[in-house]
Image (cartoon, rainbow, N blue to C red):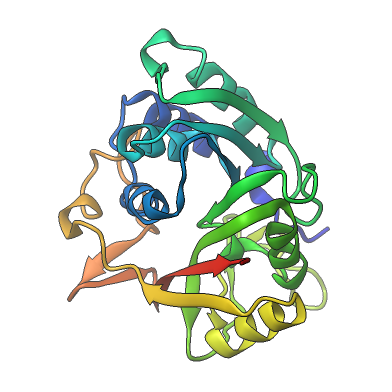
Length: 255
């Protein structure tokens, strides 16, 4: 049976996220960039909903950057990630006086287990590209947010639907891979059409250029030796295998 939810099958990424959440490994460049983007949209005491929170590694960056008191709830569909996130933020060294409450919940972005407008700001980092479709997830992010949604995804002028096949490379009788993950790029026009359907009028895109090139071409960000199929930086552009990645932020304001 073909499946795109490869993360449920192994624990490597969960262990990696845990080490990033606890400071044993450096923060991701995208995580630091997101924390900078969210700061102007936060008011004192706001609640942040982190959808696709992984092992809590994005929360570490929020703790390091956000200067206002905030509440936090992280949601991820992989049970092992939620387990590791709870472990990471039960460590006394990860306590943050500005973070007023912390919870992690298992849940799917296609049906987020949070009430309407139950968070002030919803964030979603490095998730949409790995989904088979984005219309329902975007609607869900808009639904749970009271004020603002901040998304980092691959957004460009054209839509490309891509499957990266995992080893062993096996295919069904129709040529579909049995184990893969999506690595999709969506056009601004397509994303805009979804936002309009959801009654959104105020939004903007901007490229994510806030990263250190030398942070990608090194082993220091990984548990063992750096895998050969991850992102590198060439001429100022992030490249994964054969794909130039148009990383962008989308900020949606509901009022």
